[in-house]
Image (cartoon, rainbow, N blue to C red; front, side, top):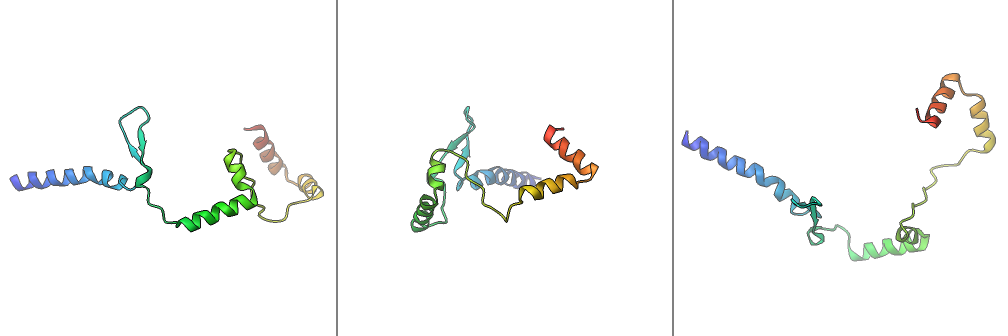
Length: 111
């Protein structure tokens, strides 16, 4: 009985320390304050080298995304394929079924 009690105590102690150990290498740690977390940048482990980061910054500077990020502006979306012409869109709307039209109208109205 005594052995079980001590073994259970050790298992409970281990189970309670595992989340703390997992947080040791993260940027944010839980805290009991109003914010609920503290930030520790020195705990973050990066997988990139300084040269890789500098190359990414230079590429962002050249294509204009760095200026947008500095202004906190949304980044433009990359084109995934050729777009449709105005006539193609109108033809799709004229040829859609009543169920498709009802679904499109519900999406545009918001419900």
